[in-house]
Length: 303
Image 1 (tube, helix red, strand yellow):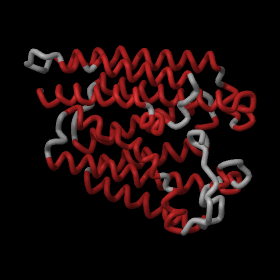
Image 2 (cartoon, one colour):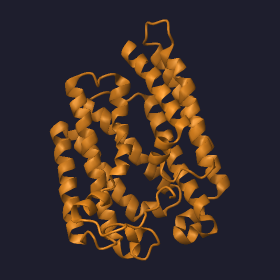
Image 3 (cartoon, one colour):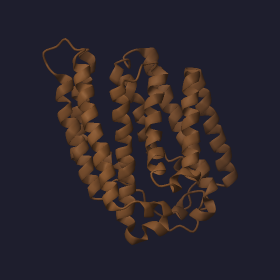
């Protein structure tokens, strides 16, 4: 089955299952980015920081599901005339719109309440994320360039949330790597849509008419180039803080580069429609990511 395409249910789903599916738990893997800043700062070994970061992760999962429910409830009539989206629980009549809206309100309130309990400033980040996601679904996704920037900004806010929750500073290089890495994935998602839909891309979503393969290739080259250069500079900057003979951070550049290049190769083949699934199913990408995590993690522990 093509990534991102929803299969027809074999039988009518129960209300709890329909509610769970509408919350799209598969998308929660994106929220692991909340762990990035605290992990890079090496504070996850502290119980209070770990609990605050995990709490922020849960808050983002709740907030994301709330926005998915609102989006599906708003688009229910359009989804019912779509080839695959008509199988979504709300469009299929398995989850009443009223129930979906109430559930979304409960999830959003819970997300904000949890964020406030952790740190009031975290609630502003979560609120900003929900506002951005809603604006993207309603308006921003229809504006060329603004759509990919907004999509990337959602990932950046996740990284910011982790830093705010654990009260750790975000280095300039970390922010640049996160921002352009997110843009790289967002552009890859658009590229996959253009490739898969072909000449019908514009009729499926008007904004896709604004993206040619050449322009998307340029955006991927720029964003991936900035990511690689920024990560190298960040790794060397962090290495100066270590008083060890083994260059752990510098060595992490190798698997990081392999991961970026492999992802670029997969994007070029039009496989970036669902980044969270792509990362989990490609063996080379997984191996490179694991190698990077080990080397970078040792560097953090050695600091």
